[in-house]
Length: 151
Image (cartoon, rainbow, N blue to C red):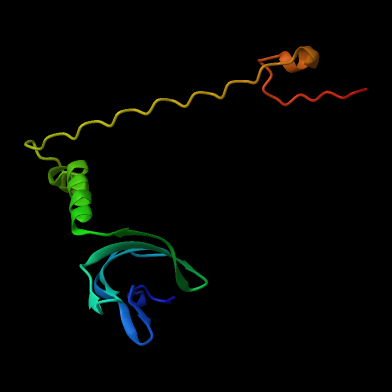
């Protein structure tokens, strides 16, 4: 991998051919955990031509002075990219982003709808108590594990 964020790339060469061509790179976050979005093209090995551009968002972690890729997400088509962009614009409307980024509000802004609260997770049902386990195991108020011996 690389020691510097600016040296990270998605470009990949195989047999002296650039099979993954980086068109553009945008560093979204910097630091020990870095997020980078790449615009790239893959070489179609049958036609020897580059396919339509795609996007890859990759997370890197710096360990031992070297950035190592931890995860990635590829946007495989323009249609998928536009769908994601539309959803993000819906979730983060421009007026709400500007207000939250600056800390200032605007009287004409529409408030964002509140998120629906998540239902609390139900506790797992306790297993039925067999008749031969005795009263110690049947005590439902006792959260500690009870063991019985065969003495």
